[in-house]
Image 1 (cartoon, helix red, strand yellow):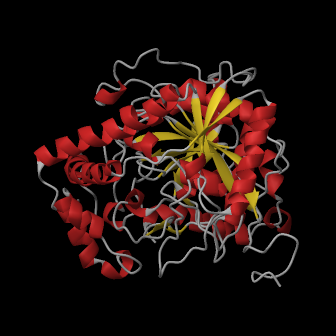
Image 2 (spheres, rainbow, N blue to C red):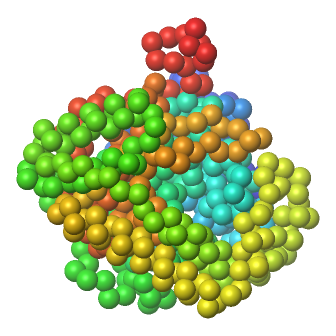
Length: 530
């Protein structure tokens, strides 16, 4: 494991020697009062509840993230967590020292940014991405880096979500033999496990919403342009965005307001109409009374158990006053092929620009192009290519036809936006669309890769067109969380968050707590149900 992982290894060794009372801390330890926790190495006695909370979260990481059955959600901890909390509290900043784990494709000044790849093991730029600078300015604490699907799951189409050469396989805290989805795998698992107040993920298509759904947390993919992408390892400027992952819609909205903002280096962030400064405003008292919501009936999938949970969520929406409108619709499949062509072209172009911007690595050759990454993987195949290949990287390297790219981009955005989401909202006179986000988590399998059920969900149009997509936990199947997707029009981010908060208040389903052990059927019995 590379140097950045040593901080966690050192913590684990120190924890092994800690008093038994520290090693048996309960999952609620992160909420302890000042002075009640055994101090991790490098920490002083807490002087405030915020400091005590941060210490409790570190203790919890040491207990549940390391070892053969650990979650592998956290790649590295920042060296100055407590100092950050104290400074934020002293300055009276809005987030008041709340801790945030950052997906490891977003640059922070104190830690390397690897995108999960050994090729970027020494990528220490010493700079903050603008969204991280915004977070700090609002009083947020960079607690550390979260594991992810390597290269945000764009290296190969037969990957296992949640695996990276740097961080290993991320495990789902609700059932550690189940997948976290990806690519914001560690962000979703860490929030569910209580390792931080919230986390920041990134999404190109499903990489915030899918792991949020499968780990039982709130995930919000904002409209492309609300949050800067500068100094974030790229896939696609058309579809990439960072976004919040949290345990409530209120917390997600608070974090979004902290990280959003204009960036002169990212044209997509400029000139946004009616930019909202406080996304928490109005969440507490927003009513669904009379609000028309479209129900995407063809995107429920073929699982009766998932349909049952979804129908219960619909009943909750109706009980809150919403008017539900059934919609039967199958999108134009040309959208998917066109979007894929866009991703391949932009990956080569934009990855090359990002790599060219990096300061030279110490003790390691600095990759400067996608071709360099492909060559690195081939030269380090035992570590990088053992479980899956790099076919998508190779396809992207050959995607050089700019005219074809521009035509594909225009088509993808038109179909996903104007001809799908805009039409559905307008023709059915609805403000939002809802569908299940994904089914329950599948068993992780490094040999065979992911086991997606492609019949579930309607997130791709929002990802391709750059529209907002919120997922909120709506229940569980055999103890495995599933989420409700709420989709809205471009720039309707605030309205979508308000609708999510209203559903959250109306929700009748009991949500599962993380169990931190292998999956067992509900009601007892072994994994085979006997």
